[in-house]
Length: 121
Length: 172
Image 1 (cartoon, chains in turn yellow, red):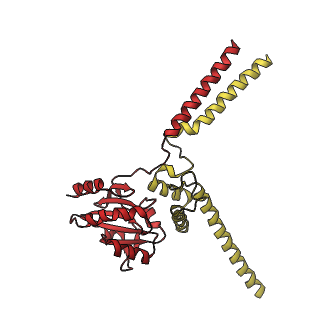
Image 2 (tube, each protein chain N blue to C red):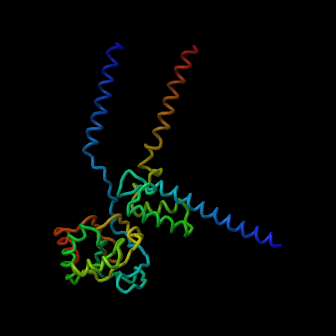
Image 3 (cartoon, rainbow over the protein chains, first blue to last red):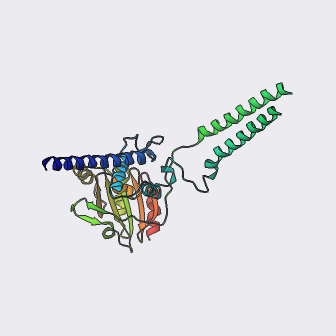
């Protein structure tokens, strides 16, 4: 019985640790995708400025409130504009940005394909 | 044919690259978040500086009045410069100046106000900077002109005489 109790306690402690680690991972993932507006060129994760530190606290708070990554990012986007996100959203301003690599890839593929066919003949 | 084409295209490519970089040099790459006008002010609860009471933001801002929310700190040099202008504005009966004390200690902030005067009707105490984030601010000083629970205008950086005149004209 004692062993059972002990193992349950150990299990709870470990699962708690797991939960904290998950939160930490999520926090890192979110802060890496947020641009520091004071020290531009750095992410919130990298920066140690006053602004970045406050933002980290805020991200922590939002995670604890149970918000998802998407909700947290859109919260900051609402406050500061899309520039704060490193990962640009897919909308009508960024169609070109997102689709250009795909387009270049297809054109390049077509050129290679054409050349290969020519060689074969 | 082929021999002539290559140097020409090379020169062409270099010219394009040169123009892009040359123009890029003159670009200001500092981004300032666009001020969203007529945005509702955020709802939050915060500690008041003097009374240590926790209040809701709705208790501070009355919808029938003009407010200037000024984010300041005792360690911020531009705040010191704009403070005399805030003192002038505080005398205007049509507008209330609300302070948001950003990442400061109470001792330093109190000394600051004792030395330079206190223009603020109310001061929100923001020790960890999270309240400023609710407002969409990213530094000190920043000021928001508020009416009817909406942000009418946002001023990033220290206020100057021109802005004060503009505010006074707005609130008349």
